[in-house]
Length: 317
Ligand code: FAD
Image (cartoon, rainbow, N blue to C red):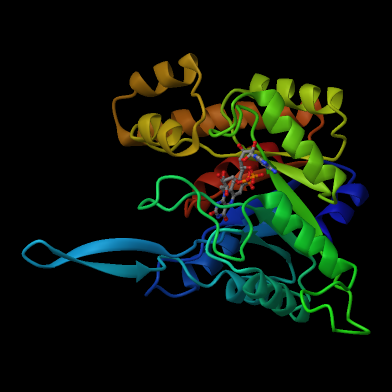
């Protein structure tokens, strides 16, 4: 079932989660444990992130560097199929521009369609560390909107090869990302929203936001989106803060602000356990207020910490 149909049919705020494929070399049981911990809250859908190849340079002999390709977290498509089969839940694979030629994207979409997967979250992907700024593949997509066009084309039976006739039309529901505190590369929020609107006008059926810790950022964003003619559901992405280290790593990695009160609460803690409790308490408050606002879904970035998500979900669902 499509995410948009879950939302349309819902009588209350839905619960959903995002999981990360395990590190290469690990088995799938960590994902199953996550889901086993969360199934009692009846997730409407589960997003599975995609992690592209990175390059690392290793010194082989004095001064000589060897370029090595590593894919740290493979398995997105396989995990989606396994989750669908095991839990009868709707998986939402993330698909990205980075590292993909259009032909490879088409083949991946065909695989997803054959597996009966109805949803995709369409993203550009971040630049890889060794490149600094995002670089599309030759014959790949530079922006999420270009990838979205390929998904929409396939939904209309338009494949890359113009000679294909009587083609199968896929029927993917496509979501896209939104940034209440602005995407880090956008010169300003207005420009960011202009591109977001294009994605919605061109077929994106819902938006999932980057994490935020101050609900006002989300409320302001929804208002701005509506004023700018973006009228699809805007699903808030939620992450409970779980360690003092994240006071630095979250702003650094996700380009979001942490409210003074939350930072003060965490800095006043005397142990790791206290920090975790402060993060959970903050998240519960956030979720309750978002539910009162009438959000369609609370979407949790589990990041391998399903017990923390479960603690929050128990209080709010
Ligand atoms: P785009 O929509 O392409 O936007 C990127 C930047 O370009 C923005 O600043 C935008 O304003 C600008 N822009 C957009 N269109 C145009 C245009 N036509 N011309 C000029 N400028 C334009 N990354 C992963 O690698 N794997 C994941 O699984 C993953 N999951 C994510 C899930 C969510 C909910 C979110 C919020 C992010 C996720 N990301 C993931 C990170 C995401 O890929 C990055 O934030 C990336 O830098 C931007 O992706 P986007 O789809 O928003 O890009």
